[in-house]
Length: 214
Ligand code: SAH
Image (cartoon, rainbow, N blue to C red; front, side):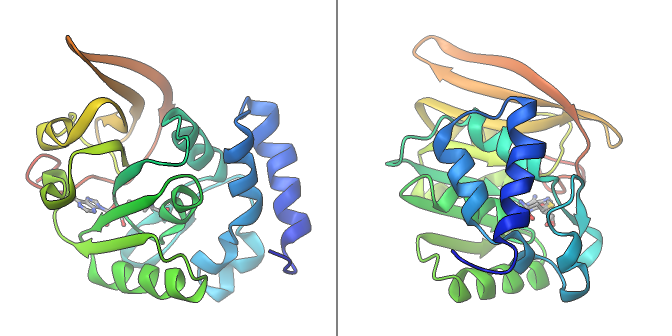
């Protein structure tokens, strides 16, 4: 996409992502392509490519670009996957995923955010994303199991419904911890159970729901 932010987006990739170890070429290409400024308020557009999270509506945030890239890379997508996201928020993370897999299912519990994200998906013609309003800690059983699941809000533990809705050999990435600090965990489902690895300390807004914070 050729827009007035293309150069600044390229700089974001060169200065924030590559030096910190983001190396998957498809992830880098998606971060270069998706117009992040379309997912924030007009007043914040000039700051959309900064090295920090930004506020969106309803007291929520759009994650820092590096964290979006890190979580996306952890899913090791090859293009054919069906991916579930919990916490649509602005829609930016779902948009990045939509460039790297075949279908994105995303769940958001706050209606104004869901409506805003849907508008941007339509505007950008990202037609392989479906979104619904619900408690995402319950997953989205109708379309499961998923090849990959990403949770973009922090909870006290990994919601069991999400593990249940993950395909064998699937990957799930989620921030787990208390309400101030979490660790990004990568869960891989193997024949003989699950393997969990800690990636990085992070700070996310609360995952609120039946299997999250009440
Ligand atoms: N992926 C988003 C990040 C948004 S912040 C983006 O790219 O902008 C996290 C979002 O998770 C918030 O919008 C919050 O409302 C949502 N959320 C929190 N708990 C949730 C739950 N149980 N189900 C669905 N969404 C939830």
